[in-house]
Image (cartoon, rainbow, N blue to C red; front, side, top):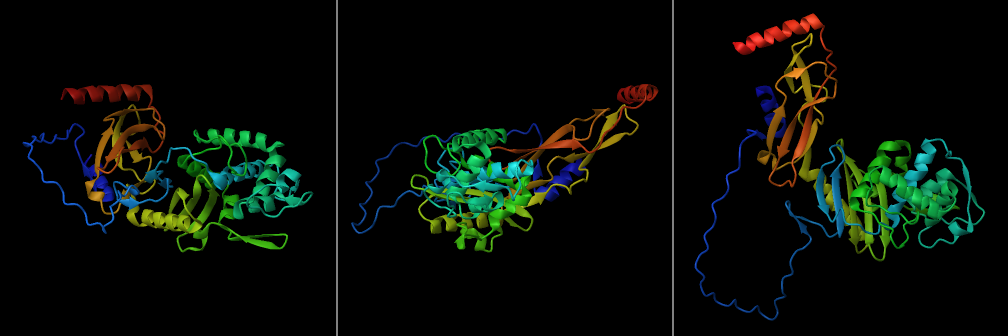
Length: 414
């Protein structure tokens, strides 16, 4: 127990409190007798009225101009900042994150190859908005269409790929929605593959980050397209609209979007010093404001928070006694070895430890035998880290168990 307390204090900078400790309530404040108050002096005519700063998010006082925003630490899943993150909105061309995921999935499963040729239909050619300048009857490789989809946000590429994989864009949108829900995007409904405005076409910041994380994890080979800055087709070179790719911030994706109603938005991912953050912003007024907002929030996330190791991966945090086994103790480690903390507020963290005092064999590696609950005044919910067994512990032979039981009863009587 002392070892565990020591490790938590060292690695978390936390104080370990008793499980049964209760917080004292502050004494009620008595109402003072009302007094007549003087009327405030009127403001000078030339002094403008102050407007409330509704874009300042607590508890850290960060300014967020986006109507919807979410910043998440990739390794731990810790939400660093959120604003209307579960409120549905039109994703515009951020839709193409899922369109690309569907294409990458087909490539991964071997249903198509990068060199597979797609014949461009009139439907793809007549698409409005951003395009890669496809022409009717062109035979274009899946790889080029995927690059045109991601890098230059080609609506024509989106339709060509949708029709190729599912026959029609409507069928493809239904497939997109089905797979999105399978990976956990419960508030997402797609009506098309491009992201053009359509009734019922919606998602959330939470779902967009989940799609992006799954693309990063499931298809690392193809995820790299997101960081390519230019793409050339028919001799026409176009620029990636993600302006963060050319900033010194470690950005390598993911997708921008713009439509009249939701404004300018993007999903961004960046890595610095081994840490990766995913960000969604939406509801901004221009490409410039979108890039500035995303850059500022990512820098704030990297600079304000740090990832702190509880124990090195693979190293036991404590040994617990075990009965009916050939060994007397079993090594236990935290399931998650890293926790995200505000760099300047570590001292306000508290950790409460619960674990089974005596274990009984057999027990398997990964079985949970306790937990560490970490709390902080700034957090709405605590972080709960399961304590798990490091390796399988088989049950000992019958005669050995009898001897252990008798010894246990004798020691208990003493």
